[in-house]
Length: 552
Image (cartoon, rainbow, N blue to C red; front, side, top):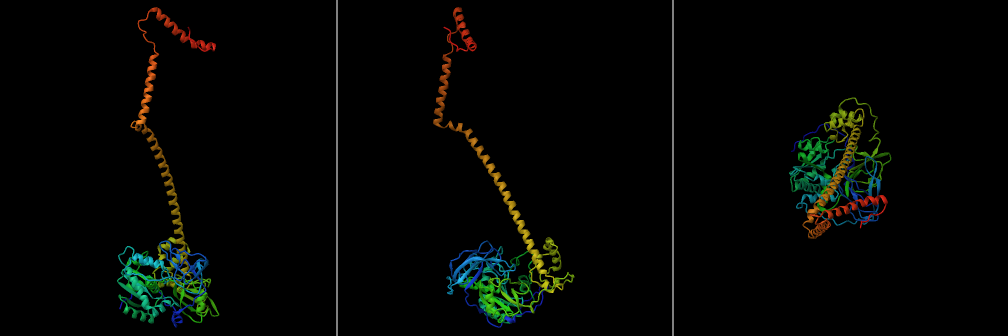
């Protein structure tokens, strides 16, 4: 038997599990309309690849993944796209999201689906297939599965953990899935094991689920690979990835590190089941098991198609009973209040609880912190919640970072045990959102700075290149004379010009007085007189305004 390594803190909660486990998983009938959000996962939302008026088939991609962290979205049934528009979605913010609205044609025709040879394909090809089939984690974080199947810089990830703890009250979808579909779940685990290169496969299940433990143990005996089913103590939040890793392996995930850096990867059991259907059958993630419980006539679990309006899911359990005060998506510890029941089922929706005041009374007013330290004793991440609260309230976000705010898993243990009823998790979420906003602003400023620096560099480069081109042209002109000497046409032209210069020089010589040596005195006097008159002629012409004429 594997040793259990307890984690720090945790709380014991009223379970409320039996209310929804009395019947088998139900299948919802086909609805006339489905509303499929394009953002159902961590990362970039899918981009719509259909438009109003398009006819689609069940399993057809209607949203293409974009960016590194993303995954595809598919049509839950056949029909006609009536709109691609903003619509209420199940989100803590209560905001709307871009959705594809499909009017069902009632035929439920599907695209051709077939599995792949995942054992012999390159892992990158299998990961691309997983991405295109829209697989994302079904345990709450909804992280795209294709990313988690990558080994990163490691040659392999030695340990694969399947998370079947389902530690939060009221939620039983994983429990029922393991009871009824244990064999298919472990087949999906075999695919994950192959892609990660894992030697050890562990399935952690809280010991308050004896039927699920029995079913998974029987499936493990027949599995063609070694897998160990481990019952862990029922203590919230044993289903946290870090907490379950410690329980099963004794390993702690250091601050700021991924679990793969300590040789472990964790997947939800529901994700493993979807992996089997995707790779073995070629079926995209178009449905999931959802718990419907609380103040309804027939609590249970239902296989609901993605895009099913939550009010229709509630109707499948008999609808709200009188006295219902609202609805929670998820569990009472980490879930959130639903603002609009028209919001659809998405991959992250594992449970919807109809509230009544006796079970979910209004929150008591917050009182000042009395420094009792109960929150620190309960924190499974071994943080100091009261100090984080003070720094978050004072907006000293740098101090919250130093006290490892981002190690907080927002489980709510601190708020649950606080005698002053302080909503501590709300302060931590506020601080995280503010830090992320500041980081985004800093990234935007850095990007603007880089754009400005690049523009300055570009302008200087263009100026330099222009100067270099002008200098090159000047050098070319200076060198053109030397180049012309080798040009026959230029040489001929130069020779003609030289000949003309020589003829002009000869003509000048011809007009110079000849035989002026040994002249008689009489001839010399006549020549001197003629020369004197010729030199005096310009002065006379200037005085009289007449043109000079040569004397006879």
